[in-house]
Amino acid sequence: MQTIEMNKKAIILLQDWDPFQIGKGAYEVEIADVVEELQSLDHPTDLAKRIREIYEHSYKIWIPIENCMQIAYKLLAIKYEAKSIV
Image (cartoon, rainbow, N blue to C red; front, side, top):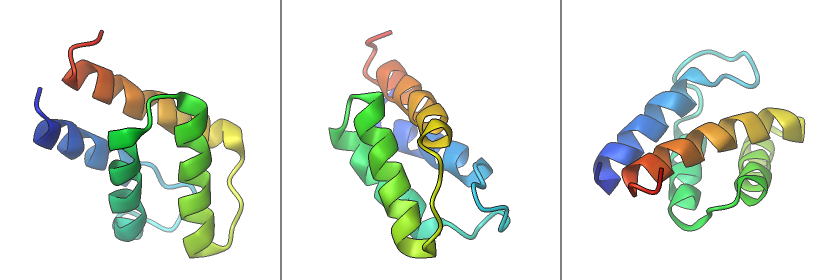
């Protein structure tokens, strides 16, 4: 899997994740920022913290780190599959 395909899968996953129950399509800027962070972060805790910061910055609503960890693990699984690390 190449980076473009990895990004597409990550975007689909993040589009389905609705931490504030706003509805699909509400998080386009945040999704782009998270996908960009996914390129450089490899540790689930680091990625989860960045996810929380990105969404909190935009919506001024705090997300429990556990929720961010769940999505971070899923995103990293996509990344590791793309890099053939699994």
